[in-house]
Length: 249
Ligand SMILES: Nc1ncnc2c1ncn2[C@@H]1O[C@H](COP(=O)(O)OP(=O)(O)OP(=O)(O)O)[C@@H](O)[C@H]1O
Image (cartoon, rainbow, N blue to C red; front, side):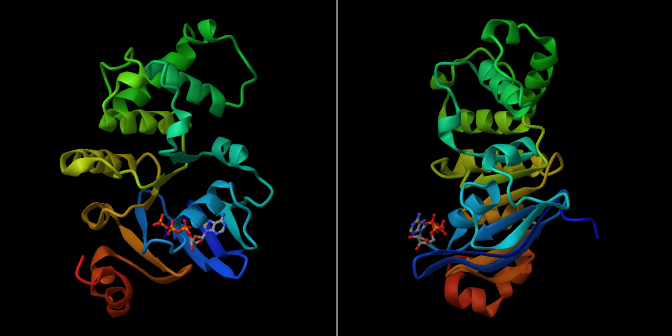
């Protein structure tokens, strides 16, 4: 079996008496979409924040490509290729699609400050940025200000910006939120293709998308993983049925 890209062992985080994540272990393998599902308050966001470096775990270990990440902050993890998307604040509304992607690429390179106009003439930055825009399905929209994009296009811009990080993996937190049926399906198709660029750890409440796209699903309940398996295994798991999926699946 291929070495996991991301390997999480025994991750725990408490807020006072509340164990938000409790001895969580999971891995993300090359080429896969691994979904993390669970009821509201199960600890999904807390887990993602520990992986991205926004919250320090109380215990446990995270490895990216075999390298221990303790002591590496969120910016350092992003530079190592951990692309966390759908943090809307990272998009600059007044800048165009192309400018946003170039800025993301420049930030990821860890380059010190450079003046913006020369950056926008630098083909070494522009060509890969245009590639990322095409892969995210935004070809022809390069010069549109982010503020003028439709909701679904903005999601695509966030994907293009994540691609500009030359990611080793994607951490996607509820990408389908607010998309509508058609939009969610189109975004799902995009994610389906992206997994071959870098594996995806997907937190998502849209169960249709989760069961359609995922290679594996882990179910988190009260901070603990109660099951990990293929969509078929998860659907058939009696405990998952009892505590979470119920009539939904
Ligand atoms: N900074 C914090 N301080 C105190 N408690 C917190 C903090 N962050 C999260 N929690 C609590 O930890 C638990 C897990 O929250 P978390 O947001 O990780 O769940 P979630 O599975 O992402 O939920 P949702 O599906 O609603 O987004 C919840 O009970 C929440 O209230």
